[in-house]
Image 1 (spheres, rainbow, N blue to C red):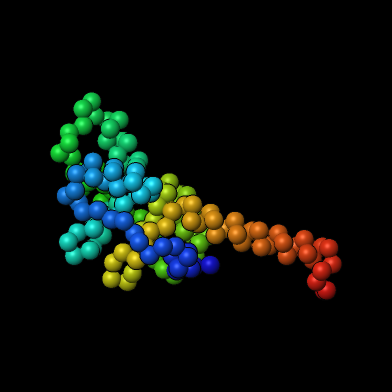
Image 2: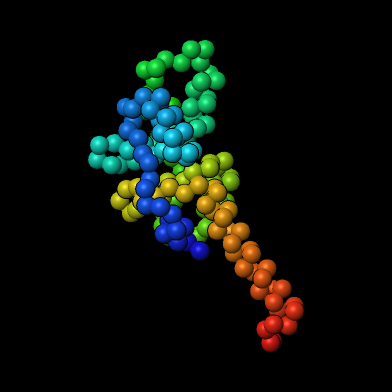
Amino acid sequence: MKVSEILSRKADQVYTIAPHSPVAEALKLLNDRKIGALPVLDEQRKIQGIVTERDILRMFAGAKNPSPSVRVQDIMTPALRLIVGDMHDDVEYVMNVMTNNRVRHLPIIDDKGGLVGLISIGDVIKVLLQGAEYEKKMLVDYIQGKYPV
């Protein structure tokens, strides 16, 4: 299965935030929408990075009194260090990339670097579990003789 198939099953809405937005705004959006990450886009809708719950936690844990003036761009993972996927990646490949790099959210970009969607490790696991359940059913049916050889 390809990443494009995961995205086709998800809602089209990807919540994003601007680099100059206050971290408090990102925190509110993450909490209100019950999501774990926000792609950071500039005015031209080009991806500049990603800000995650983990980034905000590190900000609060590392500061005695975090300033309300801290901006998303100050704590996000910038585009230069961003790990991304594309629509043609296999789900197994994406799972390995996410696991090996210890990331839970992967922006999916097009050939021009534009944001197409965002997948989570939960999305990947869901797809893999569905495949495993299907294989299990086929094997059980075969063992029980429901399908001739």
